[in-house]
Amino acid sequence: MLQTLFDALSLGSLYALGALGIALIFGVMRLVNFAHGDVIAFCVFALLWPSTDAMAIVFAGQLPWYLLVPFVLLCGAGLSVLCEIVVFRRFRNANPATMMIASFALGFVIRYFLLMLYSSRPKSISLLPALSQPVEIFGARLPLLQLITIVATMAILIGLTLFLRQTRFGLEMRAAAENFSMARMLGVRANRVIMGAFALSGALAGAIALIFGSQTGTVDIQMGASIMLMAFIATVIGGLGSLGGAVLAGFLLGAASVVMQVALPVDARPFRDAFVYGAVILVLLFRPQGLIAARGTKERV
Amino acid sequence: MSLLALSDITIRYSRLTAVREVSFSMTEGEILFITGPNGAGKSSLLRAIAGVTPVAGGKIQLAGQDITGQAPENIARLGLSMVPEGREVFGSLTIEENLLVGTGMQTRDRNSRARTASDLEAVYTIFPILKDRRNGQAGLLSGGQQQMLVIGRALMTNPRLIAIDEPSLGLAPNITDQVYERLIALQAQRQLTLLIVEQSSARAMMVGGRMILMRGGQIVLDGDARTLGSGEAIQAAYFGYEDH
Figure 1 (cartoon, rainbow over the protein chains, first blue to last red):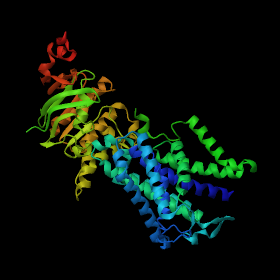
Figure 2 (cartoon, rainbow over the protein chains, first blue to last red; figure 1 turned 180 degrees about the vertical axis):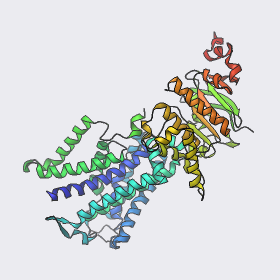
Figure 3 (cartoon, rainbow over the protein chains, first blue to last red; figure 1 turned 30 degrees about the horizontal axis):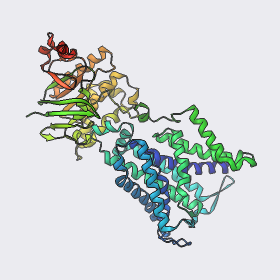
Figure 4 (cartoon, chains in turn green, cyan; figure 1 turned 90 degrees about the horizontal axis):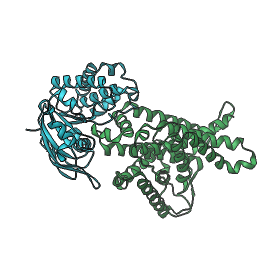
């Protein structure tokens, strides 16, 4: 029981962080960034030395954790900001469909860049091995990593909330997310806010990369895509652009997956994802605007 | 020297010309009403001044600087504060946060915090209802209160020129009266320069000041609101009787 709860929370954490990364950018520029998953993959590969050998040559991955964590977060933020400057800035006034397709293209560029440097073969990596030790809580044996995942996610969520509520930059971001043009007329610098959103989103991608990389112990150029799909669904269910909704829906999706894994009859388990997506369709039928509708999207005509 | 000067401004939406070679200027401390029927190009003109709508031709100068084609945030920094049509409060932010959004462009120094606090207090003195609900969500305010909030928000940036698009839109007449009362009192008190777009010229005649009447993307009348307002000249201009 407790085991299930923790499984749900830790899977939900991944989805929630991913959804948050997408929602942040959607909020300020109405862009659904499909390259986000590939930013996640890039962050994991940043730990390895480029080589097409089957064996992973761990490079930055050997850093002690207090250097490793900032390094990966910075990698994510850096790449994300670079994407904004090089690609998305040129699409600022394009319609959302055009931007979305551009993000697909950019995602492929990043993925094939990784493919070129590292080959497509999944490699195993032992990232922060100390974390796979089990700990015992209330009779349940949990990997330490799972606990840290949940705690770290909570810390990130609280930190982000404080940042958005208490700082000048957070205020500008929230204003811009609701009504970008009005915010600009009040002197809020468009470039600064958008780059800030990309940096935050990239850092979140880095966090996911760390968690996912240490959970699975493998690096794979496809690894971002699977999380990205679920995260994207979470942002839609949560209400596109609504940060709270994205987080909530991320956790709900995680919980739904884990619960179905446990509760479904054995024969139906291979089709778990079909049931999860079925639930998603049901939610959208009843609340097409998402669980928590974002204000900025509702009023725009 | 004029605070705001437009020369030969043309605005097009794809093939539709909304504003055709409009020129006017206004001096510091002036109240200027732009009136005219729906589709006259009033709002387009205001949005172009704020940098939100691109101009197809002409030049706009604010305080002697060419602002044509500048980003809205840079124009705001030069002292234009815009109160757009439909008010556009940040509904999910609190009232106080709404007021603070525009204060980021002031230079940061030791006194900036104190200055912002005193500006905030000044706005609360003018609109006490905002102070009572400072931590409430702005989206829950009534239309009239929202109009007061956005005027307060504009004041917080210490602008040289406030441009207001249809402050009476969607408000009951007595609420509109209240909004104007405060606005005019403020103008007298602080020597504000006001550029106000209104569909009806009746308000301009009541308040006084200068009035420009637009129709079909052009200026058809320009003069003192009170003298222009009397007589049939304005009706003819407003409805375009001379065409027939």
